[in-house]
Length: 236
Length: 157
Image 1: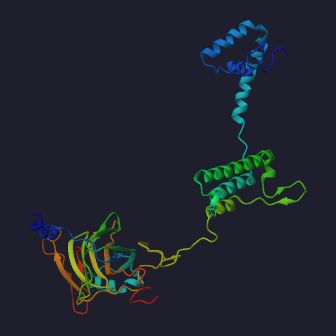
Image 2 (image 1 turned 90 degrees about the vertical axis):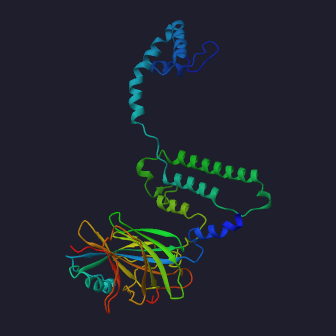
Image 3 (image 1 turned 60 degrees about the vertical axis):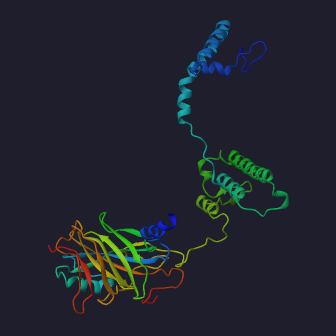
């Protein structure tokens, strides 16, 4: 080919511009520069035409292309790197300086990123069947990749060897709907049987005047041997 | 001038919630004229309500709510279908062993009463649900003992 792909002192025009020109991606000044160069280099006309012929096919190719999916091992490396960077560590005299801590954290994240990138590069090109557990290794054995959920849980419990579980004393149930289901924790506020107050237990102290009971309702209704109550319901 | 006004200002100030909070339990009950099922916890309440209206034959717990309310403070508890019960702790447990509450519920407006601790006081509101069930609430107050003792008094664990 007579037109080089990279600029040279004799021909400084970058070929990427020609492809962008063919795809209509250039702004006005760049488009004008390319057109001037094409006028001076008529031998580039076939190359321009080739680029124009390729553009529709390239568009379809870009639409069909999907970014590579990171493998479970790659995700595991990334998550371990994040967890390692976030986990509290024993402070040492040398590491107490603020900028030093930041530098170590940045270095840990960078190492994790490099490890993740390396794992991605080496493992992502594998066909879809190879990405399922287990992953074949070079010696013919099988390496069981960590389950994504297990990896996620490992990150969630970072800092806790065992998850602390609340006891009945730690939980206050403020509202419990009527249900037959057992409560996993906490004391149900409903007693086995409601013990009603007797007439000696209750005293009505004040009833504000209200249009709700123009005829004197409600009152604490009592009867011998009966539990007192305020009965505001109207008979149907 | 200011020292002379101070007692009047203190008298006019609303109750300051300085005492230990009161634990208020509200059992929300739906009473039916058709469904004859009575929840076991409501046998006493069902008898008391039926003495006023024998047509009500079914009683079921809709929900149970508990709140710690400081003396002088209020809490609003949702009942059913956007109906609410407002509870204000008017007075802590006194020498008579009673805690005073002021209630506002459907059909009951600013009623203040004193009741012995650990006893439920029922109120039959005037609200009926879309299914025709009457809303009854049973309210109990006792000094807040959270973290001080375990289990229900007088019911064993």
